Image (cartoon, rainbow, N blue to C red):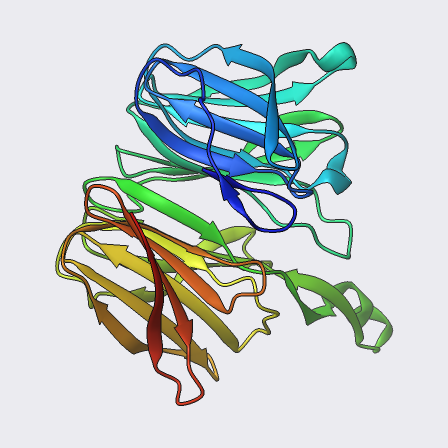
Length: 316
């Protein structure tokens, strides 16, 4: 199912020959990509309540689990995919609506999640993060038009990484140590880079980039869930270094809304569901949360004036 420019839902035949695991729409809402167990990725152009199949990407040797579009400021249409075949593939559209494999990397086990970094205002390079069933996380960076593996985090989650989500970018003031030799301290502006991960260890971990160590380190561990974490999603609302919102869901049949206040995280609300919850996704404004659960149900939640989250819609 997709949504037209006027937000009216509509559906169409995907052309896939097996289960569809992920559907992602690009920044402009005009290009849709779908991933399937048939080992294919299908690309569609959305025109009003109609669609046109543009191409089929073949390169995976097993089910394709997840997709992610890069922000268009990084040049053209760029798509990342991951799958059971242990591969991460970055695709790029070339001339004549032809797509090429720009970069391919292989893990030791099934790759469950990929997500491109959000755009920033200070010319940070594009990054891609991927999480694997072997418990590891890799971060890829685009440098001089080539992709490199910039970070490898082993044993990020015992049993496997199921989901990852970048935070909305914000700026921090950093001290430039090089200026101290002149007995002057110069402050420079950098990005406050964080992401959240969830895994089979029932844990949610928030990772913060430490500039002085050139590493991502765990800054917070949240363990209120009682079963596997299936999805985590950082709210797109404007954030600071001390205030953010994250949603998580689990096979324990709960959704938790986590809120950060003065760098302390608390479970502000626990939503109990009637079945296992598979994914959570925020609206663009961060005021509505979509929750996918059970066999074929999506519920929409909205925060009321009293701070409580209410179920405002249900789609089967």
